[in-house]
Length: 462
Image (cartoon, rainbow, N blue to C red; front, side, top):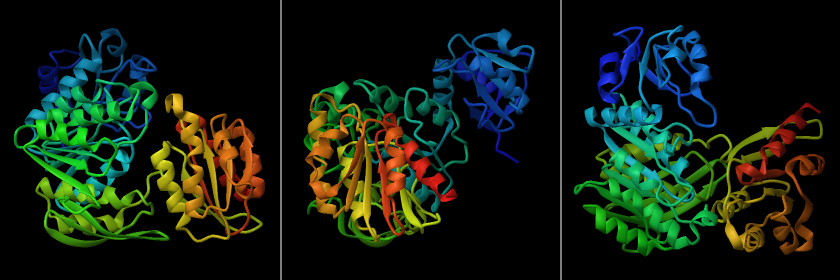
């Protein structure tokens, strides 16, 4: 039986809302999407890209315990409702109440790259030690953080929150809401630089994650990241203790050795004075420092760092973020690495390094435009030629107007083809791939490189 998460009267007290249709119900979860709603959930009718009030009937048909709405008439014919003036604000109040009644150690994670994968690694590591609650997917924005908080069960000992941003001023209020005891920044890169203007501005925004720390809070900072001095300053101004992670001597959490394998990596690190050797079950150059950061966070949160490190052997890539699978087709099998969810120059370089470590008849990179890079976007794209050559990639296919800059910067022998769209490139790549190839597909979500992934996957049908 699921743990009772919200009683009607507790939810009403937390939100200041009015109970309609029934004064007593028990919700075992909180949902904003009827497609993933579980029986017994409180359905929250957010108004975002679509108005959730239009899905209240469906929510009750799927077994919702009640609905949180601003329009009583939308729920009245279908089931009990908690009526509030503003649904998003009420969700924030639910999150705040769940936070205040919980004894869980809260850990917040942000960064230009690696925040979702690091959050997943940290949650996996902590679950090896005690009951752990964590953000799902990339629920890291103005509704994702309060939703994750509102789902926080009383039984959790640890809670991990991902916090993201697109513009200046978005991280601080989310950090204040989560009020973490530990806050971690993975890395600084030119993601969203079009909106923020500079690496320094990005670092300052990311540094705001430390604003929610109390006087006993711990800040975990990437020692060798661009504009790291700004992160350290923010950490020192807000945290009771500062832990630097990196490769350099002097870091409290230091990577000593990292060797990639076909299906993961073996690492050795010094975590606050204890030397630990551990295996990582997911491939990727980015796990070198991300794993050290996750273990440092687990350690200062009070978890058994050795048990946490051992758990990383069970780590797996997230769908769309480096998942590798064998594609069988009549001409012979090849390996597809699906990293099509997102991209920026730093994550591209890491993905190319990972591709270079793979065995294959040929190592092929299929790359789509990186978005929101501002005035220097063409230079960022052309700049990928160096890591491509360094990784020993054999052939490159490019999609999008920005990626033409990379295509023209490549040595002639590495040029596969360029097309203006992923739709146009997909059949070209599908026809070029041969048995034994290792094929990386990566680009910003808006470049729609998922189309290439789907084309290559469907090619297994002949």
